[in-house]
Length: 158
Image: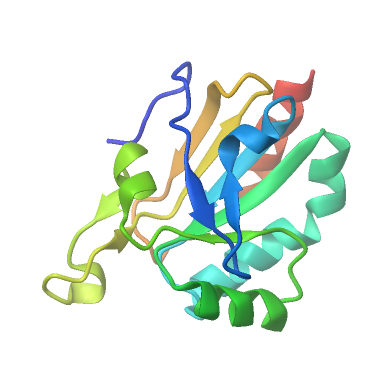
């Protein structure tokens, strides 16, 4: 079960699409939306990152930064970012340490024995790094409720 609202978000340092280290602690003082997606270039993941990109103005107005996280390589994430014209970082959790820390491991992804990914999950963190909202879809093939997520981001700002 994913971490609950009210919990201090586990900190991490992961490499972005350019193989540069990015730490969650660098975002302290801003609201953060962590968007965990299981696999770049899958239809639902494409739709999800594009939904966040399309709402970026609204989310930035709520003083919130979007960070995408997946178990994909930085090379895949770089191409995924370019193809979808994303203006937020995509981080690679190659060892699944962050995915495990947020308790959103998905075993046997796509019915493939031993293939571990993450659940499709969104965490909203406040300026102090406290989790204020969690959305984990019932299946990786299901998109989250974006209106609910965006409203939750704006409520954190209020």
